[in-house]
Amino acid sequence: MDVGRLPSYVFENPRSAELARLCLTPQVASATTGQLNAVIDALAGEMRNRRAVENAFIKLDLPDYVELRGYILLMGGTERVYVEEYRRRVENRILALKVGSLLEFLRQLLDLDGLPDYGDIVQRQFSDYIAAYPFNADQIHFLRAVQNIFIRRRRLERADLYDPPLTAFGQDAVERWFDPTQVAEMLAFAERLAV
Image 1: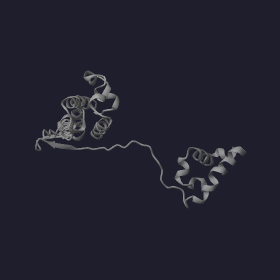
Image 2 (image 1 turned 180 degrees about the horizontal axis):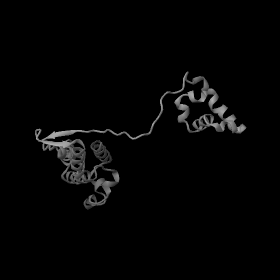
Image 3 (image 1 turned 120 degrees about the vertical axis):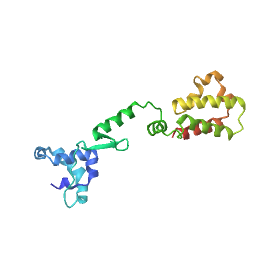
Image 4 (image 1 turned 90 degrees about the horizontal axis):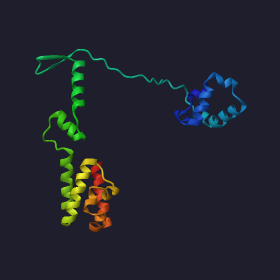
């Protein structure tokens, strides 16, 4: 039937897809006049866009399995381990790692001690940020507390500036020590770090 040759966007639209599927089933023979009129209204204009042949692709929703057999040589070729056993060992090692970031994961998994962890990177970025502006001692102390919050939560929102532990500086510490432009720059800086 020609409906099967309509463009894929017709089948992606919920209303037209329902009517197109009706045409492709035996129930079209017992469709009401209203249903047939709805089919005409929805699909007649698209008939000029139909393909010359029906879509040859069939969608199969089947899981993919790769069967590997054989063994791997470990320890310089002295230990033979079956592929399935090796995969199980690697998965167990990865699952045993308890890390907080991708950098920490890679550093532990690959034993890369030279790769800095997330906390080190954030501390370095905050140090550069603080050095770039003429902050006073109170502002720097506050920003170091913000840094610690950011390392734990990995994000910073405006409301966080008014929540503990930053309330230890006073309820209005943000307004006392930073003007609105500085607050906006601080939040934008944190947003760049979170990405």
